[in-house]
Image (cartoon, rainbow, N blue to C red; front, side, top):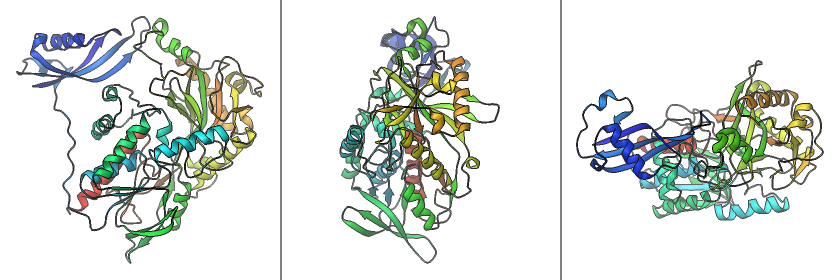
Length: 531
């Protein structure tokens, strides 16, 4: 029998045998009767700063049915999860995936495992080449619009913290994590409550998954962008036009998974011209806020802040203002750096990343304000993109050019004065920063909401409003400002055969949720072969 036991309380210095003892005590059996134990979840309980500990969930195997467990709500029978590919028949034309971020990667993996020999088209570079492009940009300020933090193998999440936590409850999440581990990711992502791979480890993991797709008969073409569609008389898809380094070409295609990411602005324009139904959607904008990591540790863990088992502390906060707007932190990177994430010339974009060890001096997070299409100034489907561009161009000018970012001390921001110098927190943005007044490049409503949000969040996390903390602008690519409308069958409502997918299409928000959406789209295509 296999049982799941939750809410096991363990000290920070626990050992493996402690898990066996607690599990056996919960089941009221001797520890020797447990012949296999698997840790499935571990989180930190820091509600009481004088007794911080771990809360764990385990699954155990025993040889007999244990009586009386129905009376214990913390113990349930468990069945090991195993992903089963849908039954399918060979497709008439090979399926194509546009975009090789997490959505495209996992869509291609499922289709390859189903012997459909998918063709992947990625406008950017393979991850090893892309890493060089990014480093060159950070060092020289020369941007490659087709190979950067936004475009290339692995998607935008490759240059982040590699965070794998998600608010979705889809059972496919376990499969995504297992595939990452089988490709070389740390095994702890299977049980950590807030799993992450780290920017330093994620590229190699992605390469391994790519090679698996190739070994199963798939193809991956880099520097290849979908520029248009070929249609049947009924409007359905029969082919695609592709632009690559060797020129333009056409590929027969009846099923296209469009997983292009939230920054493929030219692709959104192309879709609009092709007659796809697009609509503006709410998203969030703001800046990166940066603190000393030790201060975050002290605030979250109190006297336990030096405990090695706890590592770098994180946070996640949200407040609702009286004017109806929400302010929240997003993509928090413990021990990380703020990065230059532009994909268009003359525009500054920030993001955050950290290595697996999370051992940097600073912590950073996006500090975002929710906005709606009513803020865009137009009802055009792409008006959210123009809103982003205005902010990014203003940040470029405020930084003085060369992709330097405008940066302001929180104390100065709250008092409405320009920053002249920095204090205990030194900026980590790799292109360099320009001391500035963010009110000169961000809308007034945005600054007011961020200011009020900082003060309210300080009540939850002491030190969040530290005058020496930094705000670096602009964080504008937290999610897609566009949704490509699809039906219950995951196909575009206006172009049969087109499957809008992932974060860029407006149906995901992070590595794992995008990967799950990619799996779902692949499943819909496979199921259709059986109709």
